[in-house]
Image 1 (cartoon, helix red, strand yellow):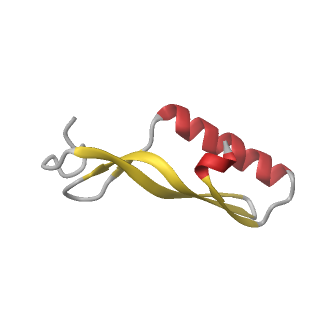
Image 2 (cartoon, rainbow, N blue to C red):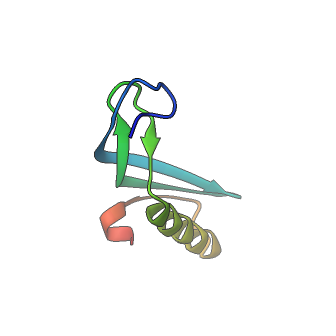
Length: 76
């Protein structure tokens, strides 16, 4: 797979931090599995992982969390 942004790099498996905001809630996830371009650093998160993160964000917003940071492996 060629990077869709720089068109020069190759995304390789790694981990990243994802920060989501919804209303007054901000939730950060560390150690999220992703493909990261070895040239420009563009991050690609798989659809299934994105869906899991969005579900956890919705849950956090419903419970009144304002700011939280979680490790991805422990959050899902």
